[in-house]
Amino acid sequence: MSLDIDSLVGKYVKLRDLKATHKAEYDLKVAKVDELLNKVEAVLLRHFNDTGVESVRTESGTAYKSTRTSCTSADKGAFFNFLQDTGEWPLADIRPGKKAIEEWKQAGNELPPGLNWSEEVVVGIRRGK
Image 1 (cartoon, rainbow, N blue to C red):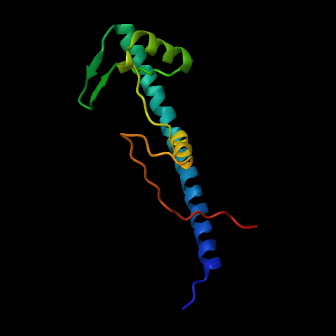
Image 2 (image 1 turned 60 degrees about the horizontal axis):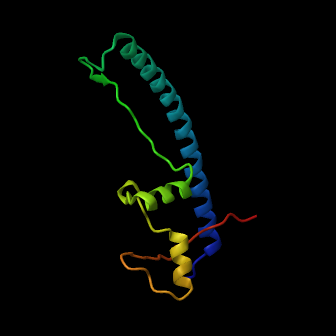
Image 3 (image 1 turned 180 degrees about the horizontal axis):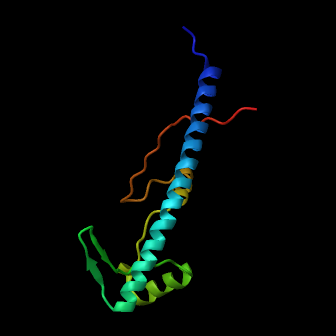
């Protein structure tokens, strides 16, 4: 029995398109729900700020105020210099750079100590004409 690759690839592309359509519909529905959730959160936050309370327990659940934080690098060089100058290395989260490690390996070097490397061969499909 021979494998009809053209038919198989065609089915794959159609399924991928169907998945994208379903995802777009889902994303649209979720965006509308998120908009409503944000409005409710804004009303509750205004209430908390106006009344000075941090939380309210109700029969339906508890609403509470919390602080969400984020820290990103605006100037990596300046931050790195700070780390070197102060020795405060615990302030950094250092990860291996995949692209640089790959180039290092391709140049014939051994994988640096303490790292794991894995590769997996996968199938990719591009749309036809």
